[in-house]
Length: 220
Image (cartoon, rainbow, N blue to C red; front, top):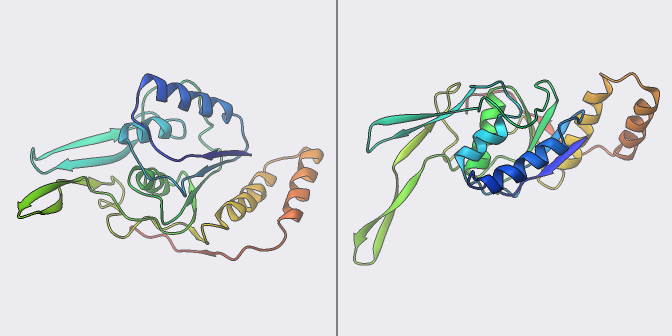
């Protein structure tokens, strides 16, 4: 079982790519993967592209940004090549909370509507559209959106409403809930009796049910 506690999407640089490649290589052979974004405040859309490229086919359309000033749209797609690859069918779970924001929300939203990951936790903060401050004079200024995120599947985004998880539970319980679901999913595909026993032993440790409810799919 792989677990990545991810606190921010750094600018895509040689150094940040090396770190990401190291982490992705470390978890490349896991049976299931949990991405913890509960404390992730966002960052670079290019890093979202890079990390997503480990879980999706090359050139998969992730998101678009429409820029009002230039009346132009930029598409963000997965890269053609990464250093190592997670199997495309490896079960993947993303933990979300009310501190999950911006690029972290995009990562979760993209993989949710591409049906690549199961989201577990709380609805995210709800920041999708780039904005900037404009001075109004007399000590006042206004933050005004200058662009809009457009998901290719939903044709909208998560601005002000957040990203709703498939499975709602508290931030505190999200890891235990996802871990239990992941263990049960992996158990379906293994035949080694020692591995099955190990999974059953761990499930017994988690036998106290954590309350959660599965939410219906929607386009918001």
